[in-house]
Each structure stands twice: as structure tokens, then as C-alpha cells.
Amino acid sequence: MVEAVPSWTDDRVESLRRLWEEGLSASQIAAQLGGVTRNAVIGKVHRLGLAGRVKPNGAAGQVTGRKKSEQEDEAAIALAEEQTLPEPPAVISHRPAPNFPLVPPPAAPEPNGLAVSQRVTIMDLRESMCRWPLGDPTSPDFRFCGGRAITGLPYCTAHAQIAYQPAAERKRDRRVAGVR
DNA sequence: CCCTGATTCGC
DNA sequence: GCGAATCAGG
Image (tube, rainbow, N blue to C red):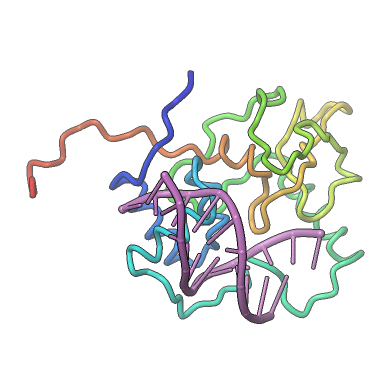
């Protein structure tokens, strides 16, 4: 099933607006919307006149003035242990993945040429590594995707798109109130 | 190197 | 209008 590339439907623009205002970076928004690049997001944001956020926001982005080395390593492990099961970021406005497949996803678009299945154990999990679960968490064979996660998100671009699929399009006519 | 948004410009 | 390429910066 090859879904046509969505455009900037009212739905998506709505999400874009909210996510942007919530302080997510363009790349993060792009990952969640899927089908668009951060450039597309930025371009749209400007066209919408949303550019210029008063909130630089480094929280969801990079850690400013932080020594990232061992610390982040432990942080990643702690994070992983704490959430062996998938956790939907609070910023998600749609719905998180209904269920996580216990098998690797099909081929995922990786423009960066990253390996799709760079599975790693919890011990090798590092910050900025995709934490998409693979297998039974109680099994010794349990692994994480391990690909390069989008900064601020627990998954790589491929898994982020699977995890954050936009809610089914509302086909219910809601134009009763305002047809325009 | 990783990332950020801003801008340009061909489509 | 759209978004890749590019720019300028952290």
C-alpha cells in the first residue's frame, strides 16, 4: 500500500501550527508529519507567517553547554531501562503507534544511507540512538533499532514515521458549520 | 559532526 | 505554493 504523498492539507497544517508553536524543531515536525523534509516544514512555516519563534527552545533540541560523553551514555541506559516499552512523547498531538511490531519494519526510507537494522542491546544503546524495540523485552534477544535517532525524538526517521502516524483522516463532513 | 532556522529560486 | 539547495549560524 503506497499512500500518496500527502500535501499540506488543513489537517497537516493544523498539526504543523501546533507542533511549531509547541517549540518543536522543523526536523522533528517533519518526522512526525512524515512525507516532508524539514525544509518543507520551514518553507511552509514561513509561508504561513509563523516564522520567528520567541522560544529558541534548546530543550527539545540540543543540550546547550553540556558535556556529553559518559553522562549521556548513562542517561540513555537509564532512559531505556525506564521505558523498555515504547513511550509516546508528550508533544505528540496525534496518536502514538497503536502497537509496536515485534519485528523489524519493512524497508524504511533512509536518505542518509543508514542501516535499517543496526540492532543493539541496551548496553550499546547511546543517546541519539533509535530506541525502537525489536522483539520481546523479556527475551535475551531483545534489541533496539539503534539507528541514529532524530534529536529530541526516541526514534530514527524511519521509525518515527511508523510511530507517529497521523490519525485517520476525518472523512466526516465537518463543513456543516463553515463551508467557506 | 551534529544540529538550527532563513532565504533563494526553479519548478 | 512548494521545497531542495543553499546560506549563516550554534
